[in-house]
Image 1: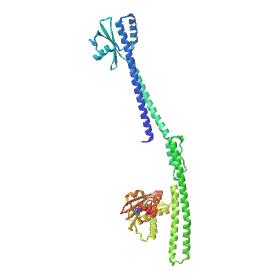
Image 2: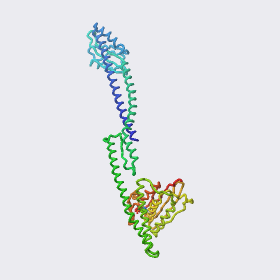
Image 3: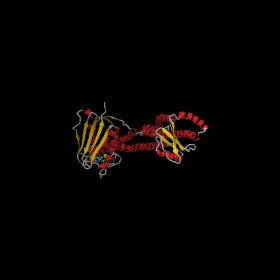
Image 4: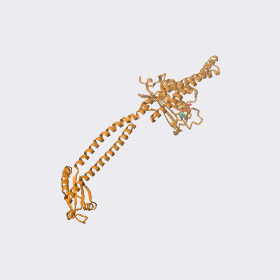
Length: 460
Ligand code: ATP
Ligand code: MG
């Protein structure tokens, strides 16, 4: 679930709950206060009726008529019940047809009054000592609070419609606030999209953060991290440039001197071929340094220069020849059973020098770690890709080392004293990545390794 949805949900649920609790609170206390008021009114009515009977005074009669008139409307459904109680007794002999239990009347005689609710109908009973008559008197006033109930209904309706409107507004507002709250994060994400290795000088900014809140501090921290990265990448770039440059000059001199010395010697001389080899490998090394320099540059740019159309089978054969000239004992065979008949099917669009480096690494690994066994290179092609498989039956790679072999300088634990730096596969993988090709490695310790390179065909 997105953070925005979470904020909206949380805010809406909490606010709605608060609203509902508030509405229930208001409704309940209004009901309670309306009921108390109505009970008071019924009590006043009972007292006046009782007083009128017990005292039989003229002014009471007048008041009785006035009050009756006043309450007639409000107590429209109401009736008064007169119950006689023998003096000294605490219970009634003749109960009228009312819903109250017998104990209710006993309580009224004891405490002077009592209240009772039966559905919507309210009852208030008041006890009077009657000196004019033989028996005391209980007046029970009965009534339905139509006005109160109507008022309550009205209030509940208002609370419900107002509540629904408020919830609707809360949801709208929570969308607005969630957006507003997350705007700086959106800005950071948009800005971060623009940052890559070639644009490390880009800095993050959000006008919705004042720089002092948590997101402002996050932006400042990310910016200072970008500055540090920028400085370190720049120094790394200049180091690679300087180192390559410093290596190239002596290599050119070695190559040049070797060629010169070669010209001065007759072909039959023993040293002639040694000088030829020195000149050849000085050239190769210069090429490799150039390529490394180019690789580091294109790594920074994320793209490859100098791409041409090359035949992958010819490139692999060239690598084979180069490896064979160094390692005479190399046993390598080409599996051409799946090779397409049309040589156009074997062309790829790539930088040939970089592909040379990448495939040389893979083939030289198969040879180095191949226990002197046969290495097989298979080429196949389908409508989308050209696939090159390199098998060996050597020492393999232990399971625990396999996740790390594409990390610079990492070498498996079973290499023993086989020489290597742990850079070849990283370089190869980088080169293939930059060409949109895929490098996959499957290996079983003690049995051998299979490297599969899948290169997409370029549509012409
Ligand atoms: P270099 O930088 O000279 O190539 P390296 O061969 O050790 O040195 P990588 O080519 O990057 O480095 O290979 C990394 C590791 O992967 C190797 O050290 C080795 O442990 C393992 N490895 C790679 N290819 C094979 C293979 N065909 N058989 C067995 N182990 C392999
Ligand atoms: Mg290697």
